[in-house]
Length: 544
Image (cartoon, rainbow, N blue to C red; front, side, top):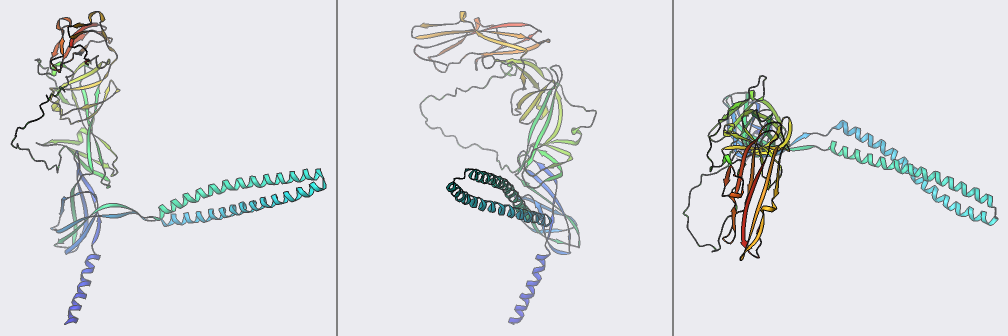
């Protein structure tokens, strides 16, 4: 009975062994990549020839960093995947180059022989030098005893010339030795590289499957990896202020999956998969005591560039036209399909792209759009003496822009970089196109209209400024000019805008303390504006 059991176990061992030996390792290829603002979904395909019944496969060259819960496996020809396991292995990517190794060893042997000869010459010259020094001491002493001066001079000349000859030979040999040592070091480094196998981390998917027949089967594996992303950015081209703005939407795509994406179908999405967020609900709000010290947030919202975008001013909007650029020749727009859902926007690119797995960014052009804009020059001389050309775009939500940097060119000249805030709640999208020195603004304090005096226990100061604006262009422009007076943070300080002493503004924002003038300027026209305010505070205090 014991013999029968052992025989069964022995046979069972050899039955199980071939199943492991016949497990096939097959490479996979990335065919599709959907890249999100953070992360990507990758699709690989692999083909294997299966036997009828149970099979075991190893699909290699997947990304080593994946969300294992996102793994999805499909097979055709009626094959059923019964189990799978993901692991990270070291995949050899380069074997030792035997031919190159032999060449390097032969070179090292020849250089070693040359080095041995040089070392021998250096040692011989060293011994000669020692012998000559002993000979000099003895011969000089003997010659000195006989008082034969001529013989002594000849002897000294001989030893000097011979020593110089040996020393020069030693210097030359030392230089040769130094170069050969450096060459041997370099060849040994090359030999070490050529003799070493190189490995890279790779994801391996081991699957067990059942096939109804012997056939060639295609497998599709998809998963999510966090090691990829894309960043939107823009090129904004302004030809002139009387023509529409051209906005070119682009993307910088990069990935660190260690797997090169070669000629893949690429899709860019603004979705955020796996965020795991849950819509919030209120909990009971219980009041409690806090420090009795007065708490006040002195930070106010920043004033807009144009007073027209503020709710306190009512105006009739100009209808802005929106249009896609119509190209006579075929452009990237013809190969990209843009789709929108309730939660995201996707760009399906019908062109093969290759993205390296080392994190290098690849730039992709997505679409080109044109839209009309209002152009105006803006200056706040208290903050900066520069005058900026601004473009304000109405109905900008139709552009479906995302937050991102934008490179601006004006009339073919690069003006710098700005940022598109697609999260803005302003009715118009404002773009700073750059500073223009042809519209000049000068701000100066008018001392004759400014004063400082004591009123009882208080100090009252009056500040009056003159703002001079000149249009040095040969065409009319619209200029927005802004000034600000301080706001009081306590009852002891009083701040007043002197309305009667100020040139009537186009708009006054009392919350921020900003007055705005917006006017059209003819070519070469100059205008002056007066701005005045007063502050009163207790004597002995300092305010700023």
